[in-house]
Length: 278
View (cartoon, rainbow, N blue to C red):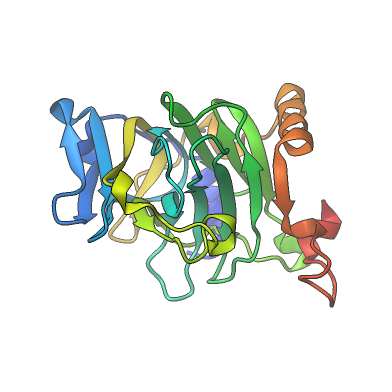
């Protein structure tokens, strides 16, 4: 099926709602026991010590969806650690949509790092401080991915929008199904102040927690989508209303600390095309 026909097909589709247990929806993929499903499948934890981190991935692949997960990040001195939560395809020229939480010295703010890859090309980083302590309680981190746009949100407030700008030659992730992944790992060569602050292993094990996963999404299996023609799901054409646009502007004015679209030193030949379009 051609890409334009496929998008039209998806736009006229119904979605599958996944909101089960972690046993049902995810596999612990590495960590030799450091990843655990607890509370009858309602809670998942990942841990990191000097020997290894840990990670999990979704059993299902998705091609478009609205995905929520509540996370509580590593508390205390988490410098050098990274908790990554993202969508990624399996192809060599892969698509990927990233949340990454860069650990900190106790008392300093976490950095929320975002990126979008299409056909193996990323370099679209935006970074933010959060307006709350993400280690004190669970907060909801959401990805809306439809044929027109990708929206990153925190507790319902949009922090970033990446629009489909294929019309001006910008690749957009729309043809490769992606799994949900998460991992907790040691990145003290770059994560905290560019690698100046190293992981304090006396504070290990470091633990991040997950709960209340929900996916309103099209499941992709054996070359087919679980969505079928005949009904439309709101999120497949969702965009930011005036209130959400105000929230996005508030976050970007007050909490954004890096935007690739303003980094002229990094792109001396000119900023990426989507930056000018925005």
